[in-house]
Image (cartoon, rainbow, N blue to C red; front, side, top):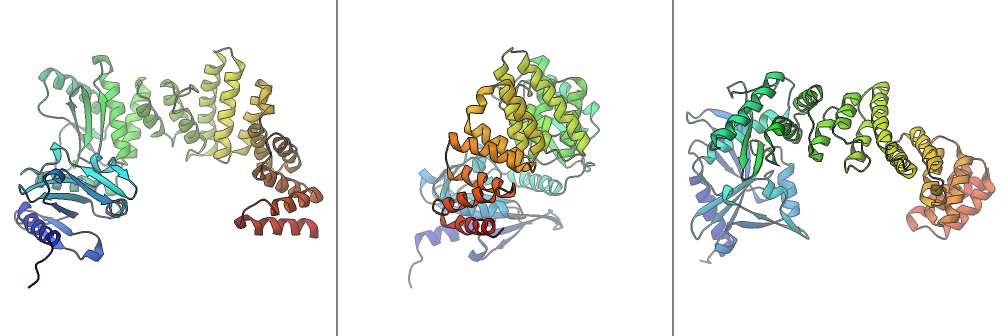
Length: 460
């Protein structure tokens, strides 16, 4: 009888040992290779009652000690696991010492794994070594994942201190958490049967760690005592947003706004401002309080774009944009340098145009060119004015600016915009000439469109 290949023997061994790894009450269903995942595991209570909790397991075995703490997988396979309705986990079995390591597909060591071409190397750390307490942790993660599948404003979240911290540190964190929970109804301080979701705050070296199970987490440099509450609050908002608990994140952001709490951590400040985006004025106020209206801030463009595309009634959206504009322009004017204000206006125009607000884009472009006439010698700037005028159905005026832009920086891209503006502006002979030139310049994919437009110009 032929001997099975070593790889198949390892696969068989890992499947057998995997059954020994999990509680007896849990049901393991092996899946066909066509499915793309090795096993489906359903969690049962010790009494044999179904919990409705299910996860997928991808088993990877090795007989090389050097590979026990890592596994190579294709990017397509990882993407497939991420797309499943049930949470998926990767289990690494080492036959040399019968040890196991594992990670959820959403753990940082997987999501941030190094990729090379079509493959990704997932590395397992000490925290990923299998322990007897892990089945209980798996069950807790699955319960949290289920609660997060359809989050509700009614979902309450327990804020708890991690164990093992120095008493003085634990007291300070606990005091800050009490202060936050006292002002936000959706936060409680004690887990219970009715409160499935739990955010644990602890320390890791010199950092403050905030984590909702293993589903969403963040680390922040441990702040000074006076900054502990705002840092915790903004850190909570970041974790809540990553867990898609947007209502709860918004409640926390409103507390920061009402109490005037700010943070120097730019990503967290942007997260908090964005969590209020359904109320653009409040979002703008929090962004301004955190200094995000300064044009040099790396999150300036992000916040501005969120405000001009906010899912809110037009008047409320306009109020938020105007508040942010006011602060941004005020900061620019304080420099006393007109080109700084011009740059702010140009950035505002670019954001408006990318969001489809051509009227606002044109207004800011006109302000920018008055503040800095040198912009009128830039092909990009002239083309942007042309684009804004075109979007406002001012085709002949758009053609004037496109023509000037083309004279400065010739290119088939601008030439096609110019031809379109001329055609819609009724200048058909000039448009026809340009389309015929474009016929020789554009790639095959665009030829049909150019020929059709040239034909229309000729026929009309």
